[in-house]
Length: 220
Ligand SMILES: Nc1ncnc2c1ncn2[C@@H]1O[C@H](COP(=O)(O)OP(=O)(O)OP(=O)(O)O)[C@@H](O)[C@H]1O
Ligand SMILES: [Mg+2]
Image (cartoon, rainbow, N blue to C red; front, side, top):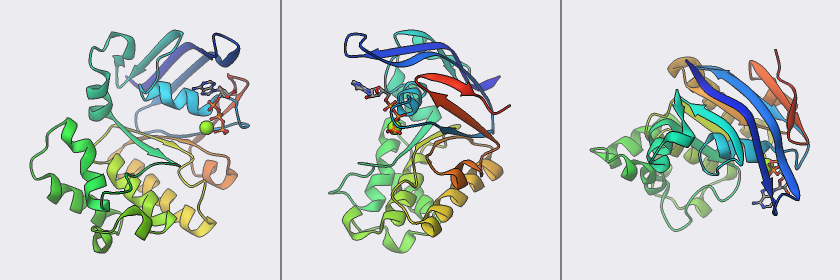
């Protein structure tokens, strides 16, 4: 079973005037680490949002962890169970602490000992000592690591990261990336990272290139 299977995916905006995705086909194996590169506006985030069931395509099919998204009744549940998101912007809720931010996804799945688990995840990203700080009291790299901890809250099989290190200096960005790669290597998590940075893409085992809503190089 493929972790992700996308067939002839199409998506337009603005009553069809903007064709963001023009027939995308993509297969990702379980445990693979792929990067997606392409110019601004080429459709990277649109593709990621659709794989993550945050938006619906005009046509085409998407299977995630063997589940056809168009046949799922409860997409938010599927998201909570299978997928962890790491976004570049607006990633944490400002008036909650790091710890509370990590707990949020757990409400959908109703874990026991949510606080304890959130603390373990913050330990994993080396931020246990800052668990009670608000996002504004953390550095950019620390916020991204909180976002990674939050993405892991429900043990997802897939992590989707949209420019997770876009705003970070290269040292911090390496640190965030290493954490993501460690997950892929140690836990077998499937990792899809959208990036503009060649050194980030170089960490992946395969780089997909997208241009004007089509994949022009799928890295094989
Ligand atoms: N909600 C929306 N409404 C209208 N147009 C949109 C919407 N989301 C994306 N688009 C358009 O779809 C195209 C693809 O956008 P997308 O965000 O996927 O690009 P991207 O490759 O992620 O770019 P970037 O590298 O700048 O993040 C762009 O032309 C964009 O303006
Ligand atoms: Mg984008």
